[in-house]
Length: 76
Image (cartoon, one colour):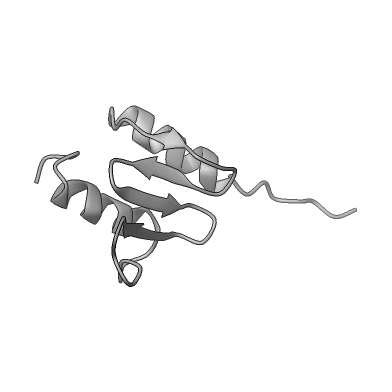
């Protein structure tokens, strides 16, 4: 018998983290979260701001936190 490990859903994790830190967001699709001008794709871990030509260099929640801090959603 094999046991399957449960892997948390990245979208659920991101929504939970944002809720816990009182960061307002909206889910625009099953893949994307929108926080102000920041677009975050939890499954890929990529984020970028509206108008950016490339994604943010740091991926995952760490990269999102950098952008949220720069945009004033979190204290620096």
